[in-house]
Image 1: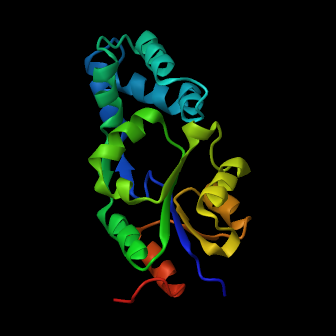
Image 2: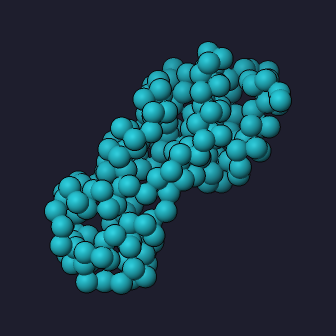
Length: 205
């Protein structure tokens, strides 16, 4: 069996949890829509996919949010309202550290946006430990599109079973598995750790 040499982590719901209702409450406090209206807009508007695909800039994203919600602050205030919604999932952060201590390279692989990363990068020390970061908005394509998986392979210099991949979205995991990656559907830190232990990449206990 090929032993994975690179660990590839999704960010949201794997290494960091997030809650967009926090952003909705903050934006509502400075705008004309209710919290529920803003939450519905976040969930349904194609603007967010456009932003995470890199097809609109941060300024364009902010301008449209401000137009729709009546947000009264500037971009700096909005950035804090929108992006400060993350908390570290500590058992998974520890898992990343353990794999790297055992000599594996580690990569972030995320459908995300510039504002989120600008907040995560200085806030969570684990982010600076990655050997590389493959982020949807920087490449103009989102998981599960094969193009973004190809970027992972190019950056890591690894292919197929040399890549261990953890993601909480079944469609993203399936796309990795189709490329021969050791793809694990992340459901809980305990289940992910057990799956990795079965590959002999972590100590038991």
